[in-house]
Length: 187
Image (cartoon, rainbow, N blue to C red; front, side, top):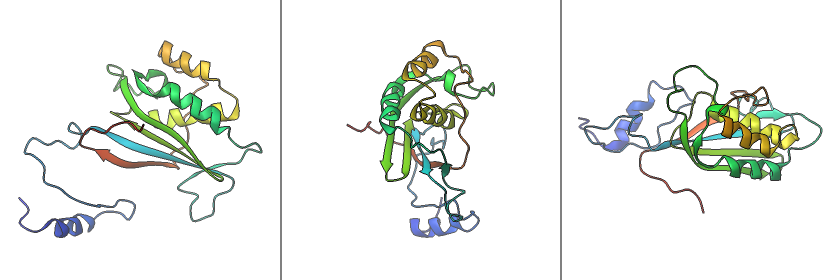
């Protein structure tokens, strides 16, 4: 039991953490709380810059350097197909640990465009191994016209990953938040 106020706990937790991890708040939890098993699900974002990233942000965005911009309308249409409760086996890199339960509820998948920046927002009850990066790769392929929405549907229907589903690089992917209470999908 921590005998001090929550602000002191936040400061104490930050002492040994790298600067890339921030503690924003703490709250009491029940005795049976488990950081992974009690989670309602995470939110990941993937940031894409259509152009060359500055040296200060190149580690934190995917620099998309093709001459044609991404077709974000097609990407939004594909994202709509990927929302909901379904088997995401075809969008996971098989490391053998989650083959038994690939059913996930993608509560939110948005494509947000702001000038030359595109942000993908993923919220689900859980993610398979490299699922967010694989979905990002597939959405980029749709945005480039290399993959169709029907191929997205087919990957979901057959549960098979094909060479058409590429895993996007890790830079650009962020774990934004882990929810510990039920969240509603955006209207």
